[in-house]
Length: 453
Length: 137
Image (spheres, helix red, strand yellow):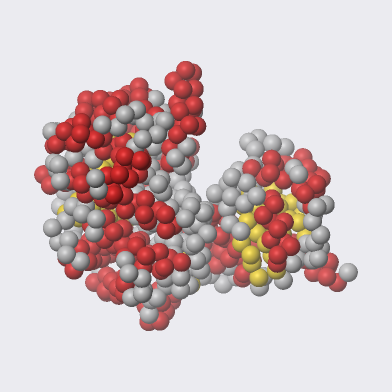
C-alpha cells in the first residue's frame, strides 16, 4: 500500500465518518454522468457558465435551494460549507445540524458535509445531475475533499495561500501547503477515472484593494502547485477591481502567463479556465443599486471573456440571501449575458506590458529562492514579504504594501514593501495615485475601499 | 512614542486594524500591531515587553464588552513601567445600545479614553494631545 493510500485510510477513519468505502467510490466516479463534471461543460459549452453562492445546514433546505436555482437557469451549483467544518470541528457542526433540523432555524452558515456524509449527499448531487462546486475556506480540507469527491462534487475551490492568508490569523502556512498537496494528489488520482476534476483558486483574496500583480502571482503559484501533482483542469480567478480596463488587463496577463508557465513547467496538456467574481467588496444597502452593480459586473465578465462568473445578490449588504433572491440574481445574470452580443475587443498594451513585467519580477524572485521544492520557495517568499496580501489577518503576512486607486479607479501600489518590483515600475504605479491636498492616505484608502457604496 | 494596538476578542475586522496601524505610523508612532483575534492578556503582556506609552484596542462588533470587563482586575496583576494610557475605540455596542451609557461603562472597566463611533483621525488627534499633557506633567 502506498504512503498516500495509508494517509487516506487514516484521514477517512474517525468517529464522524461512517465506513469510507474506497472501492465503491472508485466505481461511482468511473461510471458518473459527464454532466456532473464542470471540466466537461468547460469543453463543450459555448457560453459563460453562471454559478451563484449558497449553502444551508439541512439536506432539505439545500435541495429546495437547488430546485430554485434550476428554475432560474443555473449552470453550476454551489455547495458552501459551514465555518465549524472549515475549522475541522465536526462535533460542533453535528450539534448545530441537529438543532437546525429540530427547530427549522439555521444554526450553521453552510452545509456540514462531513456530518451528512457522502452517501446522503451523493443522492442529491446525482438527482440534480449538474456540476457542483465546493466552496469552503478550509486550511486542512483533506477529509472534506474526500467526502466531496465521493459525493459527486467534482470542482474543488481553494488553495494553500488563497484559503489561508485572507481567513486565518495563525494557522501554520507550511502545514496548509502539505494538506493541500494531499488535496491535489487526490484530485489528480480521481481525474484518471473519468473526466478531470477541476481545481479552482480563490483570486479575490481579502477583496480589499488587491493589486493585480499580487493576485496574478498567487494564481500562477497555486496553479503550478496543483498541476505539479497531476491535476489536469484548473481555473484561475479574480474579482471585479472597480475599473473595467484594469480587469481586462488583468485577465489578459493572467491567462497569457498561466499558459506560458504551465507549458514551461511541462504541463501544457492541462486545461486552464478563467473565473470572474462579481464585486466582492462592500455592497450598497439600496437593492436597486445592488442590481445595477451586478449587471455592470456581468458586462465586465463578458469583456474579460470569463469561462465562469460567480454571482452576488441584491441582499449582499444584509447577510445570507434567501433562496429566492439568490435565484433571481442567477436569472438576471443569464438574461444580461443573453443581451450582450457583438462586444468590442479592448486592449491596453502598455498597461499589459507593465503588469507583465511586475509579475515576472516577483515570479523570478520566488523561483530564485534556494529551497528545493516549489512550495518551500513560496513559503519562504511569503515569510520574507516577497509576496504579501494587503489586509490579510495572518501573522506571517508582511503588512507593508499599501495600495490606493488612481483617478480612473485602477488599483495602484503606493508602498511596495518588500515586493521585488523594479524602481521604474514602482515609480509609475505610485505616480498615478493623486491624493488631495490636506487629505491623509488613510482617508483616501477608506474612500477607495467603499467606491460601490 | 510606542503604541500597542490590535482587535480584542474573536473579531477578524482586519481592514480597520490595518488602517489604524497606517494612521499611527503616519503620526510617527512605533507601532506594535498584535492584529485581529487578540486576548486582553496578550495586550497587557505586550505593554510589559515593549514599555509602550499607549495601548489602543479597537473593536467593531460589540465583542469588546465581554472581553474587557476584567481589565481592572487584570491590570492590578501587572507592574507597568511606562504608565500606559489605555484607549479603546470603534463600534463598542451590541445592536441598539444607548451610546451615552457606553462611555462611562468602559471608563469604569479601566480605560482612560473611550471612543464610540468617532472619526479615527479626530480621535487620534485627541489621544496625542492627552499623551503630550501627560509627559509635560
